[in-house]
Amino acid sequence: MRESGVKAERVSVTVAEARDLILSEAQPLGSETIGLSRATGRVLAEEICAEVLIPPRDNSAMDGFAVRAEDVRSTPTTLSVVEEIPAGRRPERKIGPGEAARIMTGAAVPEGADTVIMIEETVSAGASVTIQKSGPKGEFVRRAGSDVVPGSLIAEPGTVIGPALVGMLSAIGRTTLAVAVRPRVAILSTGDELVEPDRLEPDGRIVSSNSYSLQSALSELGVEAVYLGIVPDRPEQIEARFRQALGCDAAISTGGVSVGDRDWIKQVLADLGGEMRLWRVKMRPGAPMAFSLVDGKPVFGLPGNPVSTLVTFEEFVRPALLRMMGHAKLFRPVERALLAETFEKPRGRMHLLRVRLEEREGQTVAVPTGDQTSHILLSMVHADGLAIIPAEAERVPAGSEVAVQMLRRDDLRADPGF
Ligand code: AMP
Ligand code: MG
Image (cartoon, rainbow, N blue to C red; front, side, top):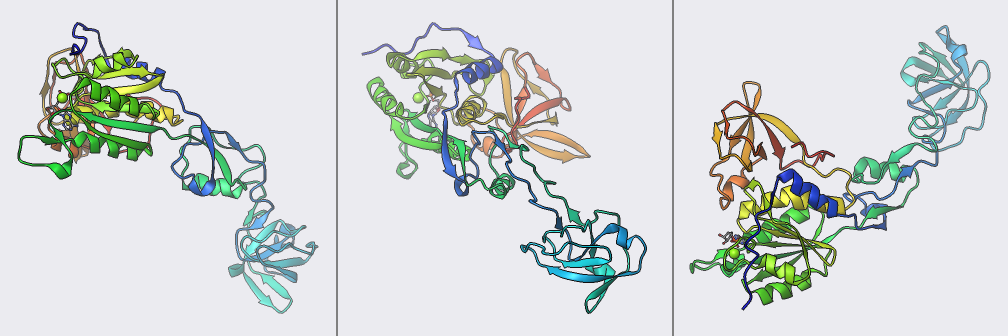
């Protein structure tokens, strides 16, 4: 029989220290080349600069007539129409004094012409056109290179690829590009009391909801989750399952990370040769939480309570995986809000309160969503964000301004904001 856990450790770090430590060990996995049609949501792994002019030549922004500005300085004036230029066809005639060309939107402006008169300001009669009203020189001409020129910076590594960038890349003729490799992440849930949701019986056992909330959190990130199921609280079995997990780029376990007789995670990670980097974090919900490198791969031993699992994922695992995926920005946005109720706690740990944001009389108010204990998942279901109550605070009166980490937002920031 092995001995459970390493019980003597007392070293405890702040949330910011834990985050820094974990991020310092998370390295991008490298890149692969993919086709543009599969690029949406992926993270760019190269710098993209234009090599062409867009638009490739001066073209018309309107249906109308291409003219020389000096010919239409005083109106009305009549010009002879020498050519008709639909979009996509090269003009054949140079526009000389007293001449115009009928031109369609997007068609190349012919040599000699510098201005387009919109059709609404003209009256055509056979081979001539009378210009009723003219604008400034250059009006309704989209200049060659007004979008990009060779050398224009289009996107930097770390950018998440979305519709506008896909359109731009296609416009400059890029059909393949280098993107960051997506990590495969193993999930295993430890606990003798756990069953899968389709095996729920009135026998006192509970569903391993963490297995599903974590798979969901990974799929939201665009990470491939490899679910390794439920493992009983037996070190040999946990160790065997972790060996399997190490075939992936990172592993996440839940439960068994505290100091109880059946809490084997730390011991098993040590037996696997892992370097334990972190265990106690001064936060609630959350601590304890293990972070270890096994064969150089990050392994997160998250606590078992369902809200602790999700909050530690949010604060530590998510930014680390984003970094491994090549993202330049790792953190959810933080909003300021007024706390709706007075909150009291002992000094020493950061508390992350589940809140929803409401607009009241022109102000944003953070309203706790209910019971804040770490097994109450429903208050997490209803939360827009986590209100950050700093470790040193003891009493935060109602109406105080707090930072709220916005859990449903994907407009990520380079700075954690707390
Ligand atoms: P532990 O960290 O193993 O002491 O677990 C703490 C609490 O979380 C216990 O009440 C467990 O039953 C519960 N728990 C552990 N793992 C899970 C899981 N995968 N899904 C839901 N609850 C869990
Ligand atoms: Mg347990």
